[in-house]
Amino acid sequence: MPMNRQILLDNRPVAEATESNFRLVTTPTPDLQEGEVLVRHHYLSLDPYMRGRMNEGKSYAQPQPLGQVMIGGTVGEVVESRHPRYQSGDRVVGMGGWQEFSVVKADALGAIRKVDTTHVPLSHYLGAVGMPGVTAWYGLVKIIEPKAGETVTVSAASGAVGSAYGALAKARGCRVVGIAGGQDKCDYVVKALGFDACIDYKQHADAASLSKALKQACPNGIDGHFENVGGMVLDAVMLRTNAFARIAVCGMIAGYDGKPLPMTAPALILVNRIKVQGFIVSEHMEVWPEALQELGQLVGSGRFRPRETIEQGLENAPKAFLGLLKGKNFGKQLVKI
Ligand SMILES: NC(=O)c1ccc[n+]([C@@H]2O[C@H](COP(=O)([O-])OP(=O)(O)OC[C@H]3O[C@@H](n4cnc5c(N)ncnc54)[C@H](OP(=O)(O)O)[C@@H]3O)[C@@H](O)[C@H]2O)c1
Image (cartoon, rainbow, N blue to C red; front, side, top):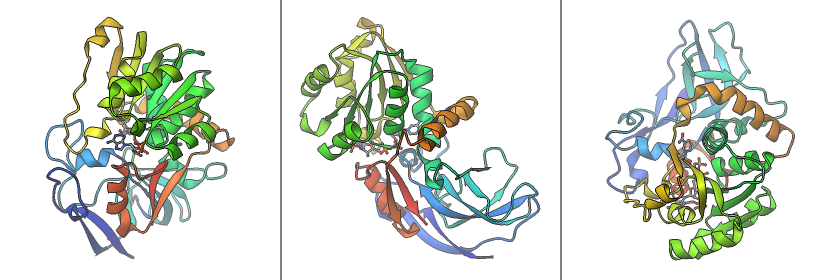
């Protein structure tokens, strides 16, 4: 059995996470038991939720235990199998973690799933045709429930979730406006992803200024918003909401290092009768097949071409992860293993 390089959570961050929170080790892979498969990972997914897992304390999920392999989505190939449904060479998606190989009990719920790479490249099963894509689908379809002609917005628009949201909302006939950090990202969001407009929040010192830009980009107001960031961005959007707007609260990345994110005008929830709903995509497994089918068709047909930022080598995963939390990624952040 091969030697396996792994990245463990060594200690918890005090405020900002740093590379010293992680530790690289090499261990032998255990022999396979009946019902298990050995998977060699090709790509590791880096996702903002991992920052929350590094902390101790109450949340929707248990903290990442110290001294254990960091949690993470992976795609790869089966290299050895003691399970009748899996063969060497099968392409699979799973939660293999920050390591080169994983030994998986193939029948465990949600442990591993075969994927078809004929029309969809393997890596996209960690992004547009995976968890981030389904996240966009759930917030848009189940919370925002858009009608054709409505205006919908999204923050972190060029990212894994934001870009899928744009593709899904355009397919439903909406006016789609993104908010992203920097001119390059905004150009990409409009020219490559087909959003109607995108605003660079870094050009605005406060919510009032960002809100003015939103007024221009959304002349009929905002009917639905998908929040990934929090703080100033959410404040600015709230100022432009129409009566009976819906806000899907997906992420609050601006506060993941512990910075408080106050909401300036919560009274707008009442005045505009806004529905504000948070959600965790893994609590809605019933929608995954329908969502993945639509996302697979959008990507497979070339109507949605998701962008990826690929870091080379497991040892560079911590650096790439810290970059993701600062917006250094452009599209889905992966590590090639
Ligand atoms: N609720 C759920 O079940 C669920 C599931 C998946 C993801 N999420 C959330 O969805 C959001 C997007 O995730 P993703 O995987 O698609 O990541 P992503 O958008 O590909 O990458 C994160 C992006 O967030 C933006 N960002 C980082 N720090 C920021 C800050 N301080 N202020 C403003 N923007 C900041 C950056 O974009 P800019 O350069 O444009 O600022 C960065 O590229 C995250 O909040 C994540 O936690 C939630």
